[in-house]
Picture 1: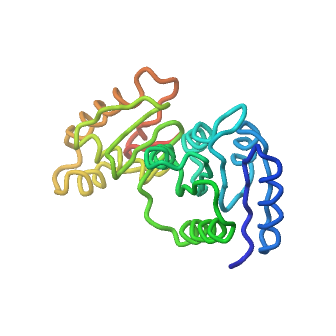
Picture 2: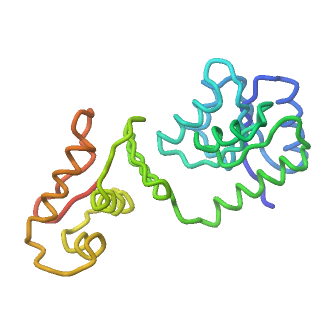
Length: 226
């Protein structure tokens, strides 16, 4: 497959040196960070295809790194490497935002194959299951909404309303569009039912947080933007 750019976040210098060399021999570009803080800074600043992240890291552990990366809106696929290979450990890694989990010891051929799969999956544009705008995150599968890591409980209609707004983040969504996609029927777009629901949603999403994400575009509709 074509060249990938890979970031390896690993504090064991011998292991990291081996991985960098092996990826380069396979025709890919590999960078290395020796701790979680450096890894996060590089991951947020560089156009990487895949991150390979050790779970136990100095300064910032792997799961914290991944969580902060996801909250910042970065979707780069992450493969977690760890000596902790029990089912509960793997589940924690995936729930933290990892895309794959490979216990140590591992073979490089398997690691390479998994990294290639993650890179291909990203390039095929699979449907998004998580929407992020700033520090607001909506998981379509678990129906969980968080802002700055704090869980927000929404009613089903509020969830659908927020989901549609976040799916179209940065764009103006008209009242007619909301009636058709969230309420599934047509009636007078001048009705205040949408304003009432948006007001309730805004009180849950924006109240108590520093910046308002749900914005009213006068005479047009609404938008969600960071």
